[in-house]
Amino acid sequence: MRIANGVLPILGPGIPAGKLDILVALDPWEALRHLRLAHAGTVCFVETEVMPFFTGRSEVGEREVANSSPVDSINQLPLQINWRNYRKDAVELYGTANMANYLAGLDCLTAMNLDLTDDYKKIFITTIPKSKGVMHL
Image (tube, rainbow, N blue to C red):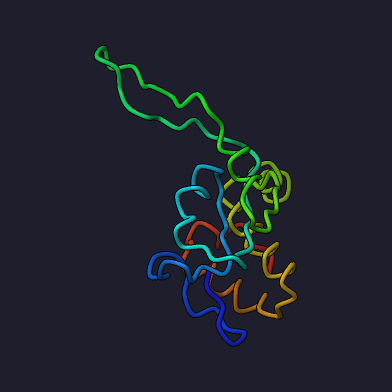
């Protein structure tokens, strides 16, 4: 997300390098992948559960998985990192892990003391059609 003058003008791609204000990553690998967009004041909300990162396939077709974890690398960054198991919490609250990104978005708005919750809900419901049946507005 990029926030300018209290408005959510940009979500996702289209954020230039060094201009990312808030990083919501539902996998620690995803957080590492988007670091080129961050700046010194970027605030990160990152899922605690690490998904397997496939680095390639062997000659017999088996997937090769990275042996390292991105968590240590992320914790060494000079950024504000907020960790939470969004998938687990989404299942507990809404019955589906599909709402994990919604919870992460609410966390970042709350942490930044931004009164954009209603706008965020509208944007979320518009961009994530699966949320319509689960959202409690």
